[in-house]
Image 1: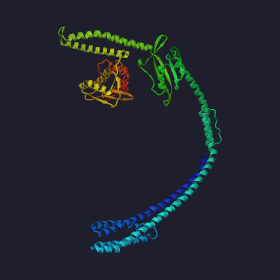
Image 2: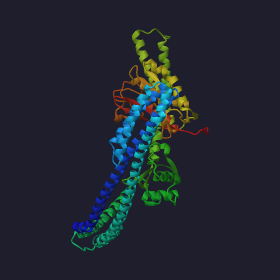
Image 3: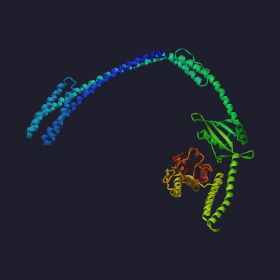
Length: 602
């Protein structure tokens, strides 16, 4: 195969080499012609022109002396004599044409004669004598110098024109030869292409056609083996590959069918409804629980509208819809009972991340929601019932400390002060539990107003500056300009700022800065408190907003409810809360609130 290709292309290579050698020779000749024009003749033309101009200025200098400009005339003459001699020297060393040497020598003799008479001219004080010398001797010599220099220019220009004519003729002749060579090369290439087509292209075309059929799933195709060279070996290898592909397709088909059956059996055993949809939104699989659920719901056309909206968003490229709180629960009435369903939509993506479908899981959280309500109500009830006797205890301790009943010794006072401090801490914990229960139950309506983020930051700085400075730290702010307004309950959000800053103060070293910051974050406004304390280990960051959670080793005496309450306040206003922390470098507690338009919220 290699020998066949080489023999077919060898004549073209030889033709290219011949054309290249001829082109190199042509370029060399044209280069020499151009070099003659630019290096030799053009230099003589420039020198001749400069001699004419300097000779004219020298003659003008003599004439100026006749009209009384003696100083100017002498200076002008002295400046142009060296320039004339420099150009004369160039011409004497650049003689390339017949009779050019004689003309150059004539200019040299005339110049020497002219300068000798000029020296005598300058030494003569009488104006009339100078005038006679100028018109009788100097002017004729100058004219002859000028005419001789013009003759040098003329013969060099004529030679340049002749060299240009010869170069053009050589170029035209070479162009004809190159056109002929190109036509011959095209004819030769066409001839050799036809020869190569029969031995190479036809087997390749056959292999290409079979490959297309194979790509369409027609694995029974066979490529004819017409030779024993590389193309024949390729055809044989292709036939073996097709045989293996047929066997592989049979095995994979069985495995895929088995995997599909196992998946359907597994999904069918799930108690929660599961629906799988293709990229066009049509249902491709539905388990028995989903079939029963949709039948009881009376939804014959597919999923409920509220779930279908989330499916369409995910199929269009939005993130998976995976709610974790009961505020996203959808209530359906089935068999005269309310059923609470928490929908989850997971996009099915290939290796490139392209969506080819979505899976919907409708988790029945009716019992879980009832248990959560029972727990919340229990906490709220117990906390409320504890509050009344605790108030009486606090009042009794207060009366005892005022010594209205009797005088206290130092030990009694110390014990009563400790008891009062513990009762106050217990009261704060009960109040926090009651607030948290109200927020979780949704009974606390948070009024919202369109507020400028800078106003929130400034107000938080004003309220919390004294707390921060009392610990030896400094509270600074950083607000990105042009932030949109947010809809927020200013009083409740102040509790979030207070909790974030108080935690930062506890862990910051004296003299360090604590920053209140507001910036744009993916269409939302992010408010954050940044400190440079010890930071939070990664394994605890996911639990930091849980109720009653306290960092191991923490010296805080709180109940661990502050961040949980802050989380519920932010979630109640449509926001999200989080923390970013690196151990040893500090922490950033933040919450994001959705931006609103310029219209007032309704």
